[in-house]
Length: 356
Image 1 (cartoon, one colour):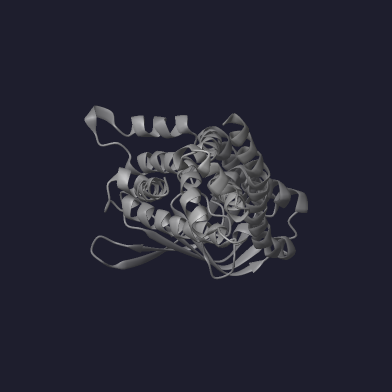
Image 2 (cartoon, rainbow, N blue to C red; image 1 turned 30 degrees about the vertical axis):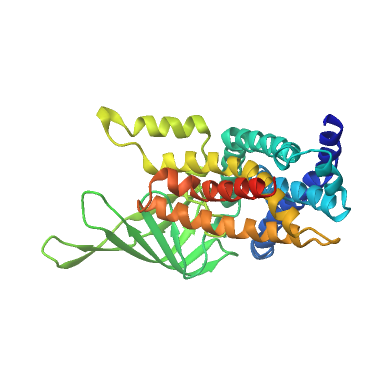
């Protein structure tokens, strides 16, 4: 039996490595494709952009490991079925559950790797990517500002500029919406705003204030200044605050949100559950690949592999949908994070049992 396990595992190793590398390149390549326009328009140094893309590799690996597990298991078992080796193995008394042992081992290894990446390395890489992007923004100050688009500065101030002059480091016809917790919001307007070394300054803006009686008053202000280092990454490179936190940072956030028995931070708990669910998907996919590949992978056909890839697509769609519902409070955390895994695991175990 050990020889059979080694044989099946040898058939899985290179598809696993190749699948992982392929999907990581596709995901990071997509990020590079999105960055091309920024490089050309704003003359961003290529080295900085490539470093930013490199920081996305751990996160891309997290997304790719479940698919690589499925692809490796499906191809190995499809090879057994297509070469008519499966009947000989089954005739020798090997049960379907025993045949799935190498795929299970592969899924467990991928699960452990995903947990390790998601616990520390991938969040820290995302933090480094966000910091690198802020440094690029400071070097290319107009990079964060697009004409006729809102920009969130991260300090309760939202900017809107009619024009962006990259040559003179200036914005034209600038609006600034200031959200205040203890007072009505303010609206500033300035004919232009100039970039400094690390700041954006609008001189002599006109302020519009809605009074408690519902009247609109105006006044002239001295200047409005915003620290560019606090500007959040642009929409092209969205910041994902909780996804850039390690397990320990998420646990600290949860602990800080529960003083005196208060309910824990739901978003942080959901993020933790989803990370564990993503790791568990490696094992679920590995188990599912067996019944699907053996059911359709006959006669030198890759239909079984194609079906498993279709299952991956459906899985990720359902995963995103359930997470959105869980984040909005419509579903319990366990269902929102692990529901898709539970369903596919039941289908996989049923398929293994039926082909026993």
